[in-house]
Amino acid sequence: MLFLLAILSLCLALPSEQSNYKEIIARAQQLSLQQARSEAQQMLLTGIQKEKDLKGRAALITTLKKLSEIFYTDKAQKLYEQGNVLIRQKPAEAMKAFKAVLEIEPKNTKVLTTLGRTYLLLGQCKDSLETSHVLDGLNPFNNENFLLQIQARTCLQDFESLEKDIEEKDVREPAIGLHLNLALAQMHYFKGELGESFKYLQRAEKISEAFPENYYWENQILEKLNKPATESAKKYVKLCKTLARSDWAKFEYEPRMCQEYKSIEAKLEDQAAEKKEGDDQ
Image (cartoon, rainbow, N blue to C red):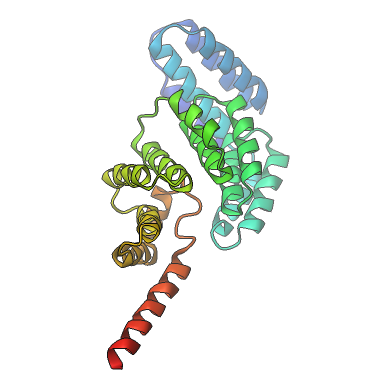
């Protein structure tokens, strides 16, 4: 039922002018109703490549994203939701759930993207990158896929490819920009270019001061520079401990968010104990 309602709402949202792209969208929707996802995706990709009109191209891209993410069955959707519940606490079990969904509904890009992020969380960088390549073949116009690729390259420390990818892409979405700036900060950090790393963290902070990872990496940079890092560590821990469910959803593009907060909190506690011991002597 949810699947049919999603298709209907997409039909109602189409532009009113008659044009070839409308016919392509209508045919792709019909294929989707028949659960022929691959054929619908290929038809839309071909239409996008040929479409000259900007409005028509945008409509085709929007339709491609929606039809690529729709669940055909309640079973697949429920299994996906179960995986999402597990992803933070039991990512290995979540990964198994997402793979099971893909056996039911292959080429569902929503599931593939979440699987790719789960690989990142598990430190399986190569698997995450390979998933991003699969996604790129299914929908090269989705910036979420592009971000996953950048995150996987950062995880692999494949900086040459990372810089090339970013140079070739113009990304203006603030949510994507936040995570791209973080990825660039991480890249420069691992290359030992701490000034450049800090610059990209400041850009990320301008986009969102509530994003904990900004302060984790700021803490890492300050420690490398042998500068006071306690305040950034405290801010990181505080943000991680007070994140609401809506915040986790807002920052869903970073699956590893707050992964280090317990170790940073323990370090702060040790520092406080040492200071107290010194004051008592």
